[in-house]
Length: 461
Image (cartoon, rainbow, N blue to C red):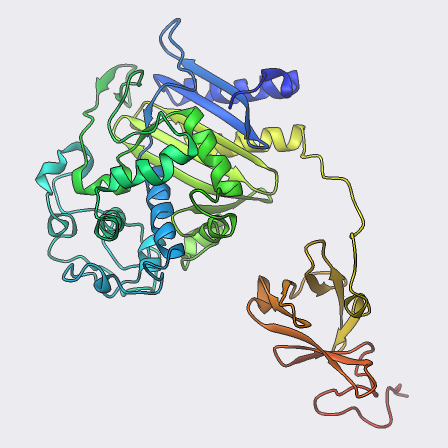
């Protein structure tokens, strides 16, 4: 996975090292390790430590907290793709009697199931999972705090439920299923439920003095699917590539892309911050760049995995302190440093190998009322439709093989686009979900709903 460091320019490498050095010093982290991935390969790895001669490398385990949730979400999406469940199914269909059964699988994945953020006392991250042996102990007497599906409320118990769902449908422990279906196929040999040497110790740093206190590393038991995993910068770099490209041995590129799409209503503060949540993945719009991934924390550890699909870049940052460096911001900065200093070189332009002339004649300008749009052919055999200038409704469309197209995104997602022809075969107009697009504004010769005034366009004196 690791490639020569000189794949990045010296100035870029220094900027990356400087960023993590500042983060480790100002965040007072006992150690911090980071990696940058581009084109599916680790192109940079750096580390800082408070112990001379013992800087961690890409093989040292750290606890990754809630990044575990993304792994659990992958398992649930596999069940969906195999037809063993539907995301719109209520939990009650598979795990009756939890008290949270009206929440759907998708709502649990997106933290919109109405569940509490945490399990009942005592503080589950610093106490043994044996104190919560059953789901009822995780959920408590009042599992639901909010109306199901109405708001995004991050819930650790919600992912404990999803772990139990995986166990119910697979007939095996969550970690065993994860190892067999995700970790082994992706080659994540240093990701595990229990720490495996070499691993970093978890520390609390005193807020007003430069002294340390060791943090307990508890087995989370029933809460494992929400935050149990230990991993390395190297393994998470490989996982980042999977979350970008998919891997048919685990989950298709289309299903991974579905996970990256916002799936939860955002709180007002989240709207202002440009944040959203998908199906087991966090989404953020930052400085003009769309970032996806997940953060994680448990007592003694901080973790972030951040991906810019458009830039084909990802960053991993791991630290062994309870609080301190803002690792998600650091990871975003590492992506930005490389993207700005060494932007992705686009593939060469190439003409289409062939073109359907009946589709080619549809290319060009169209008008919806007086608004001008352009239809363009795409290399994958589909088309796109969007304003000629400025902002407005724009969508990509997938060819259906029968002369029609289905919208993939934007306002027209799922809507049918078809060319309506006259008896002589000439195109009269485009019909898109009942919207009519014609070649001229209110074309007199086309079937414009409501008709066109017979006197046509005019001026006013």
